[in-house]
Length: 200
Image (tube, rainbow, N blue to C red; front, side, top):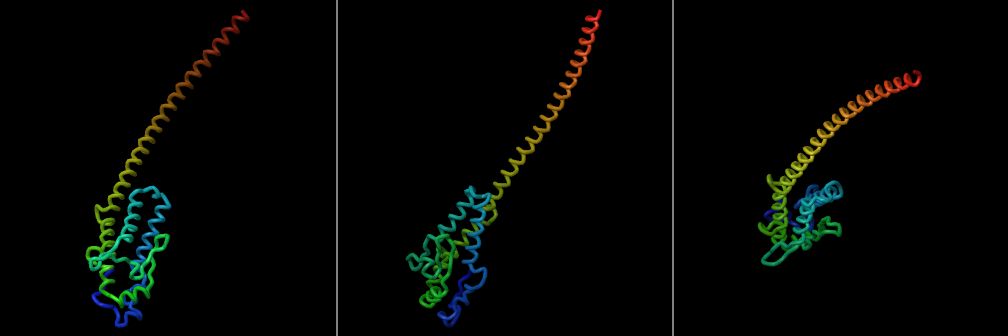
């Protein structure tokens, strides 16, 4: 998201929001809501207990809760028509933004793109922190891969243990079967001998 160097239309009260691209798909508010929805979907699924996911979601909330600094004073998104509902989704009141632009364009620019505290600046830095090589997501991905490799190793060892145990059981069964066969032969022999003695 970039802030134009001057008011994007000659009549800021009439259509300036279009000049900023606020009504087009991909505008940062839509992007934020999309990311938020995806994170909540992950949290509702298999990553519901993942601490990295919770910290990531909290990081976005923290940015929205903090203030930008304009002329030494706090400034917030709601001043330019961007608000958050009880579920955390952002929405834009285009008329409020148009009024804010007409009233003080530079203030709006600083709220969004101050090089230190502007919301777009802070969001961009946070995204880099999450997505850069060695960043939060990359590190978590490597951690999950490591856990998967460890679990797969355990599974492989357990499979080998079960295969070996099966061989032991088979050998024991064969030995028992041979023993039973010998005992049966012995029993038959003794039975025959006893029968001979009883008739002798």
